[in-house]
Image (cartoon, rainbow, N blue to C red):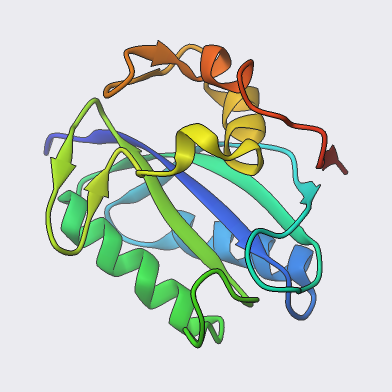
Length: 161
């Protein structure tokens, strides 16, 4: 059997039928060769970051993958495109956002991919759902468990559905 990696991703949407889109994205991920869905969080309604836009639905998922980090990133970008993602402005509204958060305990910094995700430690909309499914996963840059990181961010704008 090929070596597998444990990964965490964040999912978000605030355009169209967000819940339907997110659930279809989870199903697509699980049917993608080289990816197995291990666990997914609840969905959370969250306040947007960036320009004025509708509230988001966010969640996280744990995957077992037989892909390199770059292959997984390319797969996530292809799934976003399949669901109509168009990149117009930084942090703008979107039909689907898939972010690679953690890839085992890998620390990586390339022109196209930074692991762990560089802003995950400051985002309650990532940490709340991630702590639901992987509270003890240690984020390798800080050396702190996800649940510890969650305790130092304001999670007031994150509401479980």
